[in-house]
Image 1 (cartoon, one colour):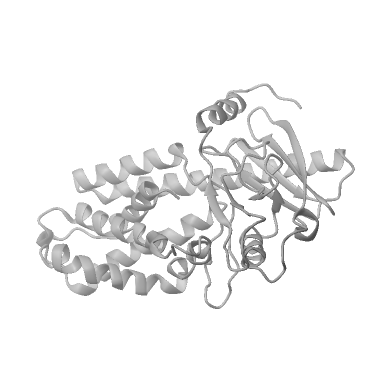
Image 2 (image 1 turned 180 degrees about the vertical axis):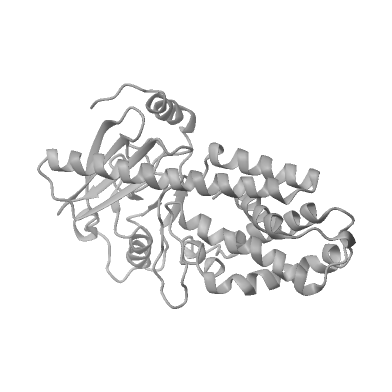
Length: 343
């Protein structure tokens, strides 16, 4: 999720469990929260692993080893090595107490990321599967703001119970996301059945910033079908579109199989778990159809673009797309405020 949410949840766990100690100048909750916050955000330092020549390198390492559950004690130790001599020792913590608090914060990061839809390698290096429970958006103010408030109040008032309220809120909201996910999946399955389809795979993901409207992507033999469904209050289907599945030999007949661009397509397709397609508005662009700001449209959040005149060693170009965010948010907002049930 976003760094603010990761930091807030990272702070909440050590705040909730750290007992009052007179030696900490009555600031135990603030100190524990601050160390946990740093630990809670540290796993995303993997974004520093990138290459100026290989635009897809970061896809390999983001949410990989730094997000593994096995890396938690090492992550907490590394963070503590940087912050103990500045903060921990000054506030009368032993080094291993600093390690514990940083590790508690670090431990929340991967699990929260796995609750989103981008995929996290929880058990690397034993298993390289990317786990994504898809029960919350990567940005959700209704989840984040109460959590931030509880952590801040716990620090100001030096009261761990306030941080526990934030943790309870986080668990309740994630539970609500799971419940909504199940409802959205049922609606999407009924929609596919009404079309006479027997999907090979389903992907149900929350749309941006909420757990009310969901993106449904299902796969048939030759196509992906993309729709939006509203679960819970005012259940509804917002029918979308379909697109042919990626077939490099058909879609890029000029592409040489031994070229770097061909290898990059394989890498991107692996990252997108096979949910790749040619962008309907740009025949040289490949998108991950699982993601779009408007849940029943194909408006890629990111893509790779090929060039027919590229040499054998030339990489694809990786791009992000935020050009029409305001316009797209308007269409999503209309779905969010549409309380009328029906299809």
